[in-house]
Image 1: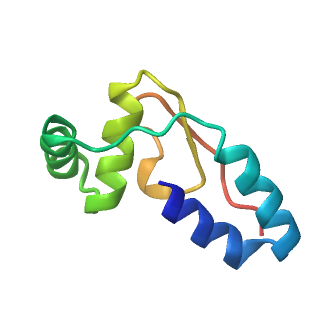
Image 2 (image 1 turned 180 degrees about the vertical axis):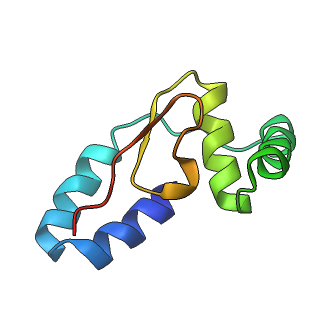
Image 3 (image 1 turned 30 degrees about the vertical axis):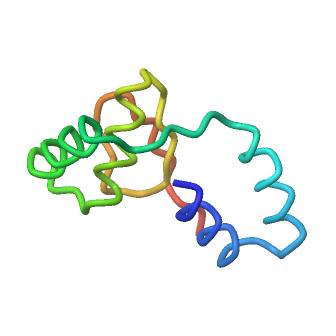
Length: 88
């Protein structure tokens, strides 16, 4: 997830702003994937037609009972997801 966020921030924000957001994000809890998370991700991928990394991110959020906030339309309408439409 850190990879995805860093990549998105680098494409979207000015370098200084992206760095400031990363400082905050790096204080968050990091959950390492394990076998059970991989299997859960595979199940979610099949059920919701998600790509591998999206499914792992979603599986992590669900397994941690975390609210998942995203502007990725692939997640719109899924349990524990707060979907924010992209600003144009």
